Image (tube, rainbow, N blue to C red; front, side, top):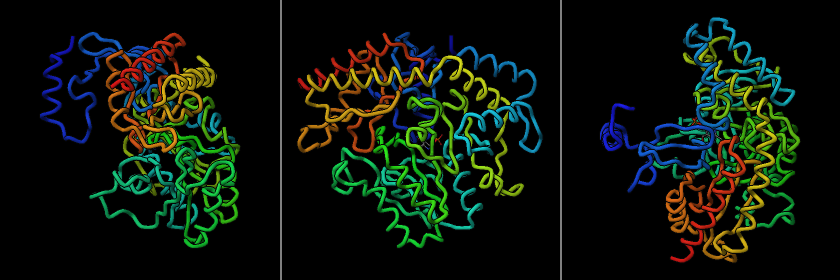
Length: 435
Ligand SMILES: Cc1ncc(COP(=O)(O)O)c(C=O)c1O
């Protein structure tokens, strides 16, 4: 039993916390008490199938006994060691990451959140190349501290928060369903990727340190690029000696049916950022780089007091072992394919669905008022989310259009839980369409 009633939890939070979060389902908020696997339980004892996984963090499921045990064991030895000292879990995790990431990536830097990993990656790119500029994409999300917010390609997070660091240029993203260049795939010949070459000529390529992108845009709505997108981009970058930073904060560790999403696209990044599922819920993140780039920082060029914290390192090691031992990458690929198929079948009965696309258990379901005009069904999406919650299924907020539902459950979700969630989605859509 906790110390507060559900009502007091809500009252204290609303009264004493900054209003920086848009608490969901305001009329009947979900106050989480516990979780197990892919199921969340609230303070009233109601259970929910989770299609959100706390922003794609809880890939290993809630309260995984192996992660709990690893943290407990480390807790009893020591739970703070500054990065300046050697410590065993940190050494083990650095070695493990060098083994499981794309073969060229060897050197890790540990921090605590996705935004810090992005900060680290951009500072490293600048230090390694001696150049100031970064190129990012429209619709990208890289976090909310200053540099990541600058790189983020959505105006909502910029207004009133500037000035932003100079030297960042944004290019159109790979959102084929709503192509920002007004073209159609494949007759577009991937103009969005090829225009990087022109953009660089205008921006002076010798001033550009790195190009940063999510291999699949998560916060934008789980948007998958065309298969050749990153090959074209990487070719251009290589011509100018510009580094490629793959931001795998959401997509890493099996989320997309490969251990890292960039593996779908046949290129190797020079730097990769990771967080979320890395710790399976424990706050830990990292940037990993090639030998050449990853040795560019000199001591104290960059530092984090909590970076490499032994509890975080132990949690991350256990979290990666869970992914390996429980075949969560394969499970994500298989269950993702199944879920995608079931959702596509719903298109026959629900005109509201304009597109379903995804890889592994990272799926975007776009609701439109009209399949021809593709007008975003924003109010319908908001209602759908409420109806789904009434049926015991949790989903997070939609992507940038306000109408692209993001489905990313814990990777441990069972097939019968997926079936129940699909049934609820079917019912919720029916209710929304009737209104
Ligand atoms: C791709 C990507 N990068 C960075 C971040 C920032 O992570 P954090 O909120 O842990 O700072 C996020 C968060 O959703 C993300 O999706």
